[in-house]
Amino acid sequence: MKSIPKDISPRDDAFHGSKKRISVEWWYFDAIFENNYSLHIGIRTFSRWRFGFAVPCMEIYKDGKLVSKSSKILPFSSLYISKNFPSITLPDKPIMVFDIQEYKSSGKWKYHVEMEFDSCKARLDFTGETRGWKIETPAESWCVALPRARVEGNLQFDGKSMDVRGIGYHDHNWNYSLLTVMRYGKGWFWGRINSENFTIVWASIIKDGHDNIAIVNRKEGDYLCAREVKFEIKKFKNNFPSAFRLRFKGKGVEGDISLFSKEMHREKVVLLLPYCRYHAESEGFIKVDSIKERTRGLHIMEFLSFG
Image (tube, rainbow, N blue to C red; front, side, top):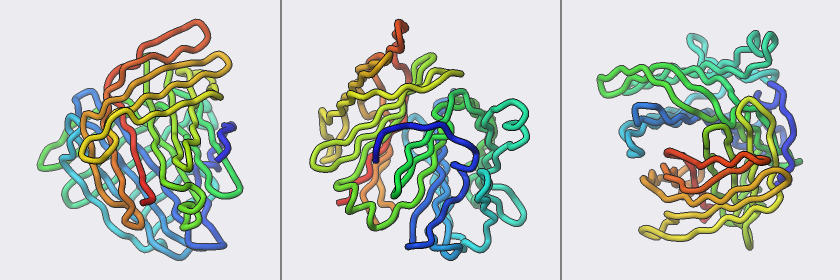
């Protein structure tokens, strides 16, 4: 995947699908809240043309530890999925709805996300604070619609109901298939890190070496692509990577950040591939032009292995 980011439109975050083969497409949302809870909400589709199924899922964490997890399988035909702008709905309720009127009037990217299971429920609004971008290839593509977002709403689980506020993220990947495994070698790491006014979204694709990507967003501003990016695994815990170092440099941007796993959520995804979602602490800095900021707080990152 060539790491050349481009501007996006709402069409980029809509459904793409595949006519050639069964492909996996997913919309990913996460948020870290002020009350030390965090969550992931995802919608994965497995389809060719308009045949297949979808898997909505939600995980809730407290201090990085998993406290609630739910998912279900829905026939693809039960969903209304737009190819023109981000919208996934059931006949009687929304799952993900993009506020197209807000976008037309102000240019703001705002999403309403709802997910409901027997044991948990979420109703959240994600409002973008940064400019989105995409990295697109003839094969797989990645749209980071919300590198950083303000998140507000309500969570319900285990008999609790809580209003929440925090910082979130949203991206969308499409056209992933068995061919992806052959192209991408051993797997990938991915994450995003915030300072007060900057956000870096990074990825390290593991082939014979590492194909590294780092894009820095200014809050309410533009994005910058680092050309020199180094990602290192520094420690292991129970045979899984647990400490890392990310260094990057480009025109007007540089940084050096160490990440230390606080909690790991390990499971199998898609074709029983090993997967780990980390809640990680950081130590380091992001510098844009002459402004240097320390990274802070807890960050979410992931590791997907192709075996």
